Amino acid sequence: METQQTHVPQPARRRRIVVAMTGATGAILGIKALIALRRLNIETHLVMSKWAEATIKYETDYHPSNVKALADHVHSINDMAAPISSGSFKADGMIVVPCSMKTLAAIHSGFCDDLISRTADVMLKERRKLVLVARETPLSDIHLRNMLEVSRAGAIIFPPVPAYYIRAASVDDLVDQSVGRMLDLFDLDTGDFARWEGWEK
Ligand SMILES: Cc1cc2nc3c(=O)[nH]c(=O)nc-3n(C[C@H](O)[C@H](O)[C@H](O)COP(=O)(O)O)c2cc1C
Image 1: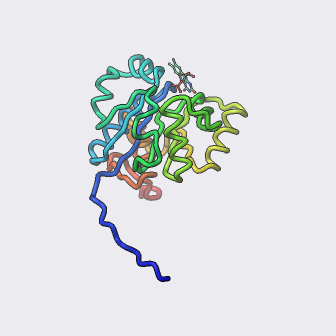
Image 2 (image 1 turned 90 degrees about the horizontal axis):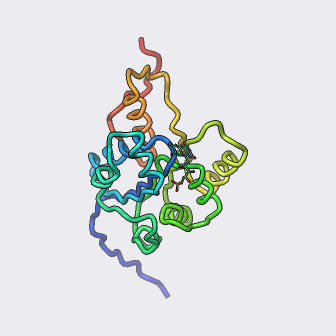
Image 3 (image 1 turned 90 degrees about the vertical axis):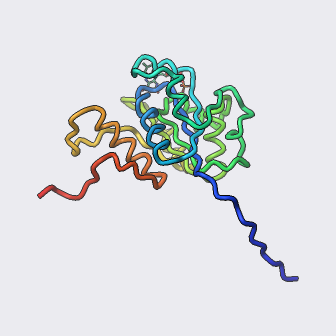
């Protein structure tokens, strides 16, 4: 018997990206990613770990509540019933920025005891985009193994390493370049940084 394919029209919706912030240094990267995504009209779902809140306070002039105000939706890290914890919720991808070695290890082992590791696990099982802005230095064999195996499982490892060729005038320029390159991975152009066009004549 021939089966007929019926086309069910889907309502247009904004693209949705989950932004998770953890307690690695580099809170400003997560903050600037949220600002860029807001400007690009992307629906953001933010989850922050306890240590992300601590580093935001220590490293930046923002209060965690100001950072939360940049997102469309904020979910508690303990809320395992949040929509983003299910593959049936149509999130288009996730970025963990910055990503601590602890959260990397949780994602690597599939040990989903908080909403960040659970949502990352969902991204991998649903074959959706997962970018980990993994930050530590130097890297141990354990870190390197976890990165390699998570990368083989489908995640993109994006260490926030500065591009010195931009001859940045400020830390802000370096952060903008990093955030621009990480959002490139979602086919989003922040327009905030100079792209390499070959040696300047
Ligand atoms: C100021 C500060 C900077 C830190 N920087 C890093 C870092 O760059 N990378 C890392 O893996 N952990 C770093 N840590 C340690 C993590 O915060 C710690 O391992 C924490 O348990 C991570 O938990 P989370 O992933 O749930 O946020 C830092 C901690 C503090 C207080």
